[in-house]
Picture (cartoon, rainbow, N blue to C red):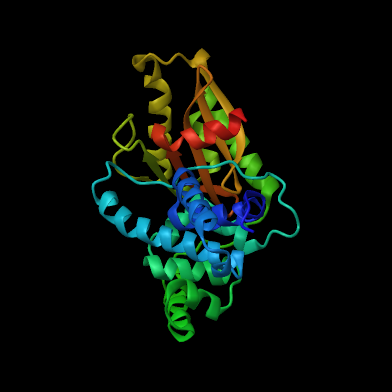
Length: 297
């Protein structure tokens, strides 16, 4: 019998697949809920393997959403960033490196350079370790075509894929120094933790103030950050009302900036060679609701 309890055992994995496909926790929740409704209504004889059945439903729903999302992204105001979510600061030893890497904002953005089918194939094969025949059944194609999709995906990702950097203590120390410098408006300390070619992307979605274009280079990024801090009172934000909370977001140490206890923005970082190489600021309030619920629970 198809039961809610049997479905719940699959929910974490289904959400993990959907989030990496879509880059949106709220949409991933919707997809998983839709999968449950289809699962519950399915004739018992049709569900020989719940895992295969549910993964197929979730992946196909994500493919449909991705294809329509590409049109919406063209009209998006400013840079588009994935929706941040809290992750376990101490993942268990059973978590694979591929699973950990694939949840970072930087890697999800990298996945956006793939076609929906390439993205699904890469995730199911490289991250969730499905066999080619299983992926072929999900995509309604052949194993040979899945191998070609994976080859193209790897080729596209190879040049842009960041080098692995696993020193979590060093990452956290860099973020702590960044937070302290931002809190005190210390331009010199900010400069010391940022790479020379650091990039900054800010996603306000046209709903809140945010940089409409990426900013590159240590000098310009520091000037922007100090400028944000300096002009905050002009927008009714006093420094006494601003709180800084270090979190584990998308598998990396991150900063939640709060105004009067409400999340105003999430700062996600990328690292390399002992410095912060990229800073992604999510300010779109629609993209902060899920992580706000996580913090409140």
